[in-house]
Amino acid sequence: MEKILYAKPVIDNEIEVLKKKCLELNSKGVHPSLKVILVGEDAGSVIYTRNKKRFCEKIGADCEIVKLDEQVSENDFLEIVANYNNDSQVHGILIQLPLPASLSHIDTTNLVRPEKDVDGFHFYNVAKLFAGNKGDKELIPCTPKGIVTMCRHYGIELEGKKVAIVGRSIIVGKPLSLLLTNHNATVTLAHSRTANLKEITRDADIIITAIGNPKMFGKEYFRNDQSQIVLDVGISSMPEGGIAGDCDFHQIKDQLKAITPVPKGIGPMTIFSVAQNLLQASENSL
Ligand code: NDP
Image (cartoon, rainbow, N blue to C red):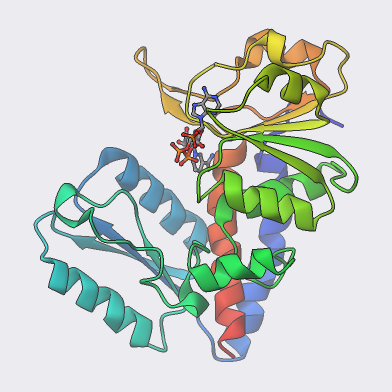
């Protein structure tokens, strides 16, 4: 296995599958269409939405960034989402978070219909994970889905493995813990109140960090026997410019079996999963 687990080889390989699937859908009269609702001009959100659009278009799907003014009223915002929910030509809807302060009180979790919920956040879709699904046909949260796609590509066995996930958010850690459990891993879900975190990470076969604390995980969190695999979900902007993950990549890489870099690791896998979910939603609409 490669030491540095980049997303690019995974995506280069898998994108052909998506392109083919898109053409098949076209031949059945379905033209996958995603609406990304972007309210305001948050710099990070503008970049994320642009990347999603680019990737969808690469596979032959349609993606419109629906830009709404930061001052849009709650009623107008809700009406726009409802209209896309009711439009049979729209297969996927994604509300880019965070919403501006004026709308931040809205719980967006269940706003998008489950069958168009390419983020996989709707309770109906989350319940599929509770029920034991592995995410092959269901719309499940994109970062967990991307992690499983990456593991499959690099031959990282999950069954029977001890996996430590650090971070229990509703978009990454919690759904990931269910998904990997469904893939027969034995999962420990750690968080800021976890005691003996180092013992947990040192004992695991695979460690997935998703906390947003740049370079927190140094060499003391891992064994020094090149047997552990680290998947770093964290993305933090650094004061000196650029972004960093939760792990101190250069300090720990030599003592590990493999590690994902930040950038170019899990981030692109998340965008890839959005496109996968869009095609799945389009197929399910037949
Ligand atoms: P949240 O802020 O919602 O959750 C952070 C989690 O980390 C919480 O569960 C918190 O614990 C835990 N935590 C914080 N500090 C510590 C600590 N010192 N020790 C142990 N646990 C800690 O974050 P998100 O899940 O939304 O995002 C996490 C990171 O992943 C961010 O950097 C984000 O930018 C990135 N991200 C990257 C994506 C990608 O595609 N690569 C996609 C989504 C997010 P507690 O619950 O106790 O507060």
